[in-house]
Length: 273
Ligand SMILES: Nc1ncnc2c1ncn2[C@@H]1O[C@H](COP(=O)(O)OP(=O)(O)O)[C@@H](O)[C@H]1O
Ligand SMILES: [Mg+2]
Image (cartoon, rainbow, N blue to C red; front, side, top):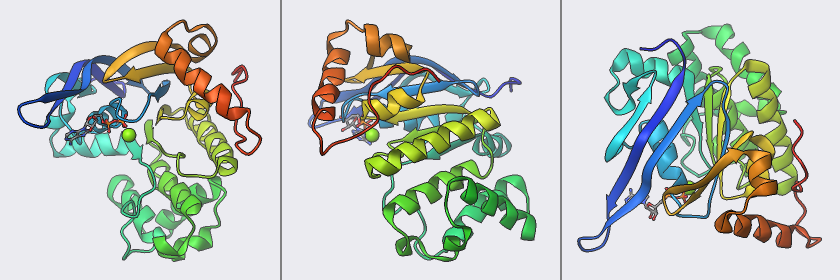
């Protein structure tokens, strides 16, 4: 294995069998390098292939063609030891769903699991790690005694982020991780996530159909359309200088909705951070 934490897509393609004999290309020959220094945003309309890319990043889908490698080895062929290292270094936060936590376990139990399994901490050391991470996400650690259905959706989603951050991964992948949250909560969660990555020198891949959140948190922006990367570059350049028709459509759609008073949100002001 190579020394650095990297996830490398090389001409990675994913095809699915559709209706009849149709083969649908969900992700088309994507090249992408993710490291602990990445701050990548991936944006695109629903169905553009974002989640399929995410699933390939974490080994839930193997590519139909090309390769997706962790530290130089195919993710879909990692052995037990390498898989453990992969889980230790790469963590996914998916959109809040009723199935994101085991309903029979307290939140504390669920968040302690990766601490026990991947960090080998036990007893009060494990609890301290849980408390510190939960606290850093502006959550009251006493809430962890509850079951997942006993907290609000916004709290549960922050607990899902805590479960990913608690092992201090080198790369954090978020797929629509704030999309279900109120806009007011979204901003604070984005800030906490950004802060965590800066403080812990962790890389971030932030995937969303929402441009403002993605632009806010990323330094490099990738625009997906029908399985293809149609534009990529420094976030500022893509937002302010894009001439690409599809990207302009995304930006214009946002500008129109952001002007309506009942739909406030982080504005597309110049990203200086
Ligand atoms: N397991 C699957 N089987 C068949 N088609 C799939 C599967 N997963 C995704 N797709 C298709 O691939 C395309 C991209 O989906 P997805 O990656 O979920 O897009 P996004 O996350 O951008 O909304 C869609 O047309 C979707 O229907
Ligand atoms: Mg998706």
